[in-house]
Length: 283
Image (cartoon, rainbow, N blue to C red; front, side, top):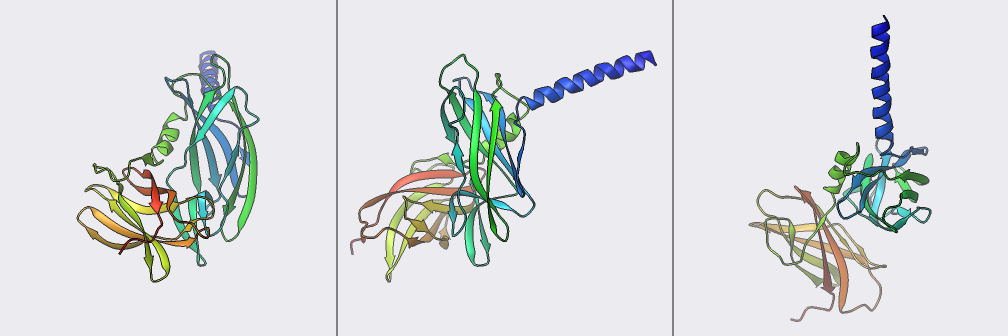
């Protein structure tokens, strides 16, 4: 019996240590009525940057929004000002999905999402406490505003218990790619403004190499611009032509407009930044 008790005591000690190690990589959950938020730590890169994730879990069927939410909803807003020894934070957005409910099209994430981030210290050699205040919204039949405050002292070391899941969501973030560059990945071949009987649209030609899959395409512009749902115009070899309506834009804008194209696909997604010339094309 004494031997059994000693064995149990040692096992309990190791279990306690394991839990403590795991807890060091996650903050407590900030709970709300339909969702929860926490910070997770994925370790430190060789260049000194820390890998962090903002995890939002929602009740089944609920969703939250991308940086461009679509016809309704609001994007998450991240406030890191309460952090300690944080020089900069760069948040990345996993490629989203498009949802149509009651005639409204929204863009975002359902059930669960992790926004990967890189945190660089203000001063090397000192501990970092990441403190986040987040304002966001979750939606099912109606949209519900939510907010949370979470904080985590970032552990040293290359990996943690959260490295694998954070890497999984990092892989879902679009990779930057130059427009017009042909290779073995999804990408933009060309994009142009095309007036169509008074209705303004953008025509895109997308490269979809063999073995790749294009799930959806999202176009975003400066403030005041709103683009609609893409419509396929056909496929020719490894090229697909899409037309995206311009639902709204500022008045009297001509010339070059900076836009961001997100191509959600597999095995990876792509992000292309280019200037869209919205002058009427020459005959």
